[in-house]
Image (cartoon, rainbow, N blue to C red; front, side):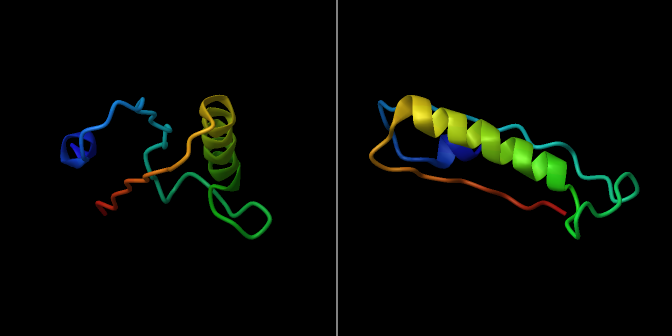
Length: 65
């Protein structure tokens, strides 16, 4: 849906996987909930940025709680 809303571009589209939220599954890790998952998302995004070396970055995010 967010891709449909974005302006047309010849640049490639990249999606970073985000696990479904479940408040009953994790305890805080070093004071942060889902620390391991957040670092995994960071690493995945960083790898894309290093590979693509974009001039600009557009980030779409949605919260549907």
